[in-house]
Length: 78
Image (cartoon, rainbow, N blue to C red; front, side, top):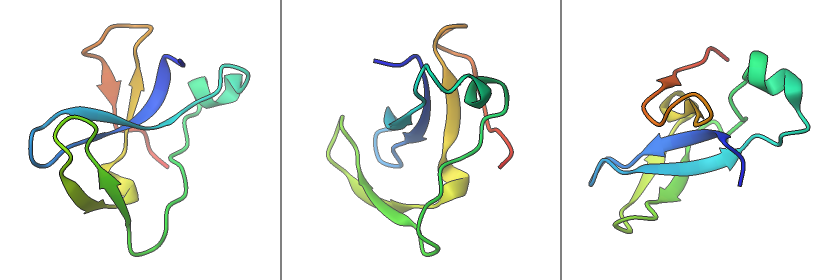
């Protein structure tokens, strides 16, 4: 499992869910993270913790680098 990923925070239980992982081979993504492309109207995502389904947009994605510390995250510009 990659330690660098894009996550969503569930609007129901506030759990952090992995949306996509950044491959370790893609070193440029570590230094210049670019949010994944998503459909213009948003996308459905189901929380892996509580099962709540909701529609999210690209702005809801947060960059997480667990190699630094579990509490470190930035909302990287796209």
